[in-house]
Amino acid sequence: MVSDRPAARPTNPRFSSGPCAKPPTFSLDRLADAALGRSHRAKIGKEKLKAAIERTRSLLGVPADYRIGIVPASDTGAVEMAMWSLLGARKTTMIAWESFGAGWVTDAVKQLKLDAEVRTADYGQIVDLATVDWDTDVVFTWNGTTSGVRVPSGEVIPADRAGLTICDATSAAFAQDLPWDKLDVTTFSWQKVMGGEAAHGMLILSPRAVDRLESYTPPWPLPKIFRLTKGGKLIEGIFAGETINTPSMLAVEDYLVALDWAEQIGGLPALMARADANAHAIWAFCAARDWIDNLAEDPATRSNTSVCLKFTDARIADGAAFAKAVQKRLEAEGVALDVGAYRDAPPGLRIWCGATVETADIAAMLPWLDWAFEAEIAAQAQAA
Ligand SMILES: Cc1ncc(COP(=O)(O)O)c(C=O)c1O
Image (tube, rainbow, N blue to C red; front, side):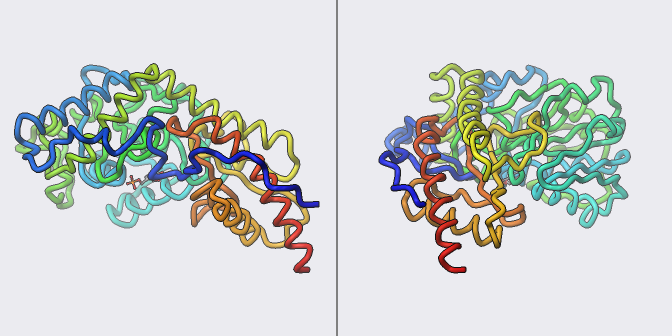
């Protein structure tokens, strides 16, 4: 029997995994102070870029001797420039358990043509990080956005490793604890947990990563937007707000406004607690039902940002069609936008739980998931 439509609706039905919901206090007027029509190299522009860097450092607790740069092309730009600039000096290990990690494997093996050790796991699982050789350079994704499987802890990474760790943390930063002493290169985009805009990436380098940049020249050509050194020395300006090319000062302002919000609500612990509360609400929903489950098999690896779900009801004839139909019903009712599983991932739903999402909106959306599931089971029975 199909139940009635729930009475309540989420105030904000935006549960996309990127670009993610804006902070709850966001409005376009908040961008009025943007340095529009001004040079990013003028004092006003440079100060804003520098503030974005230094406020990121303090919010995330990045050590003072780590460099933080704003680079072109969002998270992808940051990961690519790290891989192109640093890899090849020693053996490389590429680790992937979902689509974005798999993309970095392709780049290392097919574009850079590195003879890399490739370690992969299926959607829902994770590579056993205890068996990785951390004396090689290791490229991995902290939170697999398309499978909802995350690294449970950095303890497994040895402090005295000889290789560099290059970590795509775009859907983890600001929601999960990142152990800076275990990460030599960390990248993310403003568009995820902070609800900022895409286009610019953040590149965080440990002193060991800087040593590598200054002591190693890769054998392949580097386009201007990837170049982090000049004459064998780090271009320090990049890490003080002198961006390689022109940034969007509107996007910079938007990030500063997101930082205001994050600082006001209590900083990193508050951001992480909000993501946790959102994810817990969905986990509890799944635990109470026998037709839906987390895609992440090991509870320790469940993401608190990109929560990926699979339908497990034996009555479902075509998993992909079913999941799509449920998503469409939710979207048509205006109660959950953009919650379909990623195109390469197993059929299901992906519900963003990062800090900008309100737990009350998750709670208001979940009864609609019950409703859409039952409606679709009934529709399927009728069609048969
Ligand atoms: C893990 C991961 N890496 C990279 C990307 C690409 O990010 P961007 O489009 O900001 O470059 C995404 C986007 O969802 C992602 O989730």
